[in-house]
Amino acid sequence: FIPSSVKYVGANAFQNCSSLTIRYEDAEISTKWESSWNSSNCPVVFNYYEEYTDTNGVKYNLYPDGSAIVTGYTGTATELTLSLDGYTVKKIADGAFQNNGTLTKVTFVSGLVEIGANAFSGCYNLVEIVLPEGLEKIGENAFNECQRLTTITATGEASQILRASTVTPIKNFPSTLKQIGFRAFYGCNSLKVVFIPSTLQELRSDAFYGYENLIVYAQ
Image 1 (cartoon, rainbow, N blue to C red):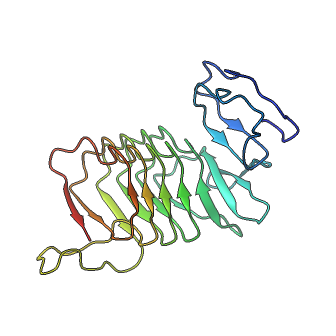
Image 2 (cartoon, rainbow, N blue to C red; image 1 turned 45 degrees about the vertical axis):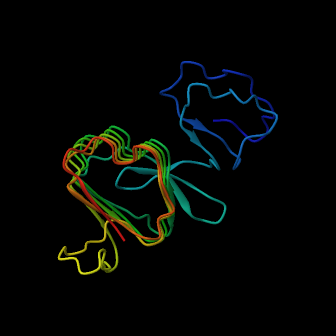
């Protein structure tokens, strides 16, 4: 944990600490920190406050506005709905569920804006995710190597993807989604069909890399 009172961090301060999660009290680092302070690319949780754990084993911090960021998971459930009593989950932190081997289905609820980098990467038993309207960003490597992932659905009705198409449209991603990050679904080779909404602004490199038979429909 780095408190906001720390005004300077030197180059390579966390060298060879790639498994370390850094929690920082402020929303962004000081301009006085060296640009290479985090050369090992350790996951960083900003706006860190006291960490809590709910009855399902979901770890979270609270923002000043009362919303929450999910930072980790110690539970053993196979299906999980990411809602917290009394709090809106605004973000899933970088690496929060990385390499979890028990989850098969995750349902995200309204209020979620961002799924962080590597949030569910390596979750090799994950089969299904449900995304809410309001989600704007899926970070880089967010679902990287989720090799059993076959179903991505979003809440709300699907719209027709192709004019005069005989394909029945499904809603994979919410209409609010603006960015799918670098290698976000890399290696998820069980996916067969993906519908991309017209509202998507950025589809980063290799977002769906590693598929032999994936069919992509664009609105």
